[in-house]
Amino acid sequence: MNKAELVDIVAKNASTTKKDAETIINSMMETIIKSVASGEKVTLVGFGTFEARQRKARQGRNPKTNEVLHIPAKRVPGFRVGKEFSEAVNKKK
Amino acid sequence: MNKAELVDIVAKNASTTKKDAETIINSMMETIIKSVASGEKVTLVGFGTFEARQRKARQGRNPKTNEVLHIPAKRVPGFRVGKEFSEAVNKKK
DNA sequence: TGTCGACTAATTCTGCTTTGTTCAAGGTGA
DNA sequence: TCACCTTGAACAAAGCAGAATTAGTCGACA
Image 1 (tube, rainbow over the protein chains, first blue to last red):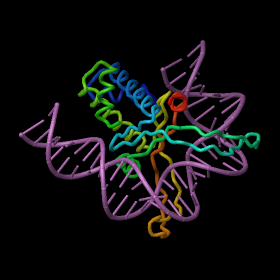
Image 2: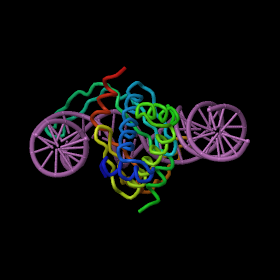
Image 3: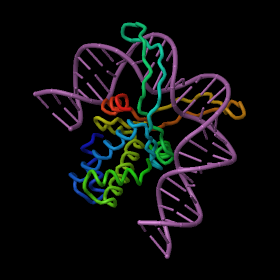
Image 4: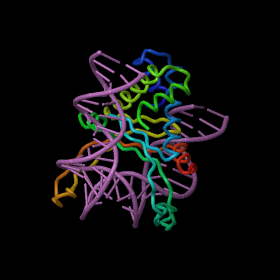
């Protein structure tokens, strides 16, 4: 599913226009990105939590050339799955 | 940041009401959950990809009692961070 | 049309796993 | 819209499975 399909379904469920749905979804993603980038985690109960995780520097490896490379410490966005989300995935199909 | 703050910011940025923003966000989360639960991954360019991952059965351990426990194979929701999201987190603060 | 995601290699490190408690967040009713 | 109550999230410990790392190409998405 791509963003267009998501917007379509959301617009139908929320009884609004695709334009409004897309605008809000884009704004939501932007807001989450900014919040996580600023170090603040975003908690959405029943869905999950977006947070920035500190990753330590470590010795990586280029699987292509099998060459050792140094990976500096950096922050990466992380997502912790919520309860409802996890249960829905395990129950269905 | 909790959902109420997110809705507030999104409503302001999208020039809509909190009610509409919350409705759409809830519908969006529900749609994503259902899609991932049905095995279909949801790709949001610039943000990330939600997908169901198959996890093999393995020997876990209860850190509290140091007791070995068997974890059955199951599906868990996963989130892969997009390019824009990752860059925003590394650049800021 | 141009950009971004998927795919894949081998190896190391990070996170997930459980359970209970504590605390904050969400939902509902007024 | 606010307060209260219910409910979900955070935290810790120990070990293993899985995620992540690079880079180029293909194909899909904006």
